[in-house]
Length: 502
Image 1 (cartoon, rainbow, N blue to C red):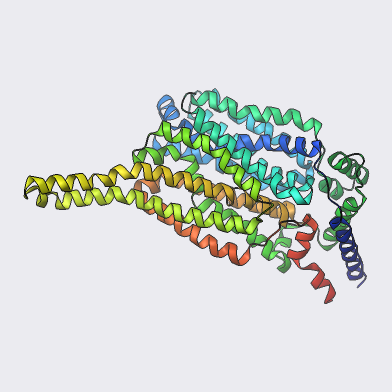
Image 2 (cartoon, rainbow, N blue to C red; image 1 turned 135 degrees about the vertical axis):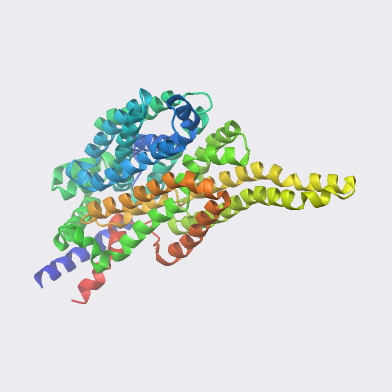
């Protein structure tokens, strides 16, 4: 009963602090901007890894003599390595801190990219892909968590979404530079931002919420002063962080079984569900194998890649601007709807090719026996179908990536960094990140084989999953705009209600 009274006292303290914090407006300091920039340098390398197979496919297969199966394995090894990194990302982030984990990821990514750049055979390629993949698995968890923990709540969504912006910048660089740089040089460019991040981490503070968890109160205050400004009153925010940390740690010591407590079930379903939607709706396949899709449709790979490269960053800016104005749910719903529709249209675009071939073969001999004027009319009309497919495919791929970028691309990571309390953030974050990368590995490996089986059928499957995503988001995903991390976590776990009924 004393524990209950203590927790009720903590809750009352949090509510008082909430009222005090609502009247204040934290300014955005140079330290917050610098810390975010340093963190998202790793996200740029993440984006290079995601788009690398699209820009380097022909060069690697020709220079190294790889088969389709070997190249598909090479592409999926990055996501397989990322799944391994995801297993250890949470524990590493709590043992080494957010900055320490980013340093480890830099070592792994630089090693991997250099191995690819100087590869002598397929073993070097696969080792480099796995090594950089493990580093990316760490980056994918720790970067959004770190940014969410250092930024003021009124701009947290925008700053965390910059993670997605820099991922898009990395993909854009590969699409654009892949037209005139060889695959070895692009691998070296992938290592460059990791070196920048490794140096920059010496000049940014550690996450105040991690410092509160490891019990260094003085360092917590110093970190907040650097982030909010030396003349800022950080007492309310520091007290809120410390109260919430003590409350959740007294409630649980964060074993794996804690994830399956009833009060955490909703957050876990939301976190894992959004990651599965992100991958099984086809994003990894479309971005990683955009050149393959263009080639299959008969559209110029050079033109398509260049146009996508120019388009990637501006369309990511839309989500960055809207995330703290519209909120998470409207952007996710818009994104999932757009992805579903464009995938169905992509399936239709490739179906036009099949329809043309079928009609031409089946009815061609009938029209051929008719007067020549009728045959010429038939030829002119039917030739429109395959001529429309390349342009229609390019438009649909561009719209798919645009709608993906404004919501499903980045918001699952934003929400993942917000909804889990500090006591389960390690295990829950690792599990969610593992779900993302393991499902991405399945999609990237299977895509080429699915594409050979049925081009239109592949996109119909992705479109159907996008339709199911709409229902999932509408029913289960909460709105977190404008709330502090502590307020979000209390509202989702339902602790105040549970305590009041005891």
